[in-house]
Length: 171
Image 1: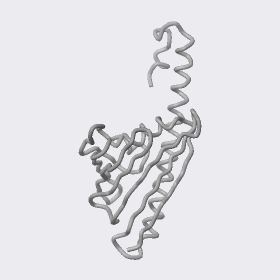
Image 2 (image 1 turned 120 degrees about the vertical axis):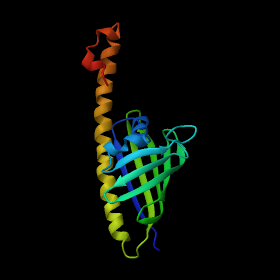
Image 3 (image 1 turned 90 degrees about the vertical axis):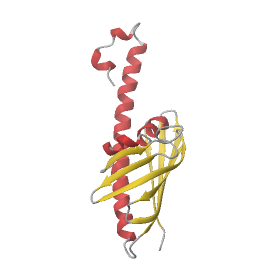
Image 4 (image 1 turned 180 degrees about the vertical axis):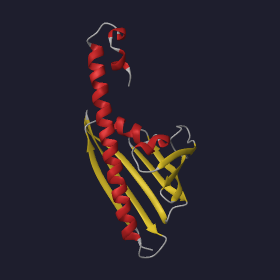
């Protein structure tokens, strides 16, 4: 079967550590992706690291992805190990700093469809799925970063965190 690729690169106005934290938290990925995610096996030594298996329920499909390479704040590499309508599916997410407050996500997927002639449709669906998910990640990360920066700036100008209104301390 033919190998298909999907590559997306997006920029966010946050440090790469923020993006990595959001995209490596398998149990909470559903807030960005139009699917339900759950961590069914922890990785070692990091819970979300190498060996971790997440289950994904997306529409009529339930499949499992396993983390096969993981370097904190640098990259995540996973493969589908069960249940998807594709063969040889691998995903690579790389995080790159542009400067102290800006970074890039480079997301690359390769796959081979199980049914000949369906690759173009699966590729189209994956691209749309990822574009929306990455837009959600960027929006959430930038909103979160702005609110954290505001709270941190405020707390530096006070002598005690007790002086910060409760609403401002809650993240």
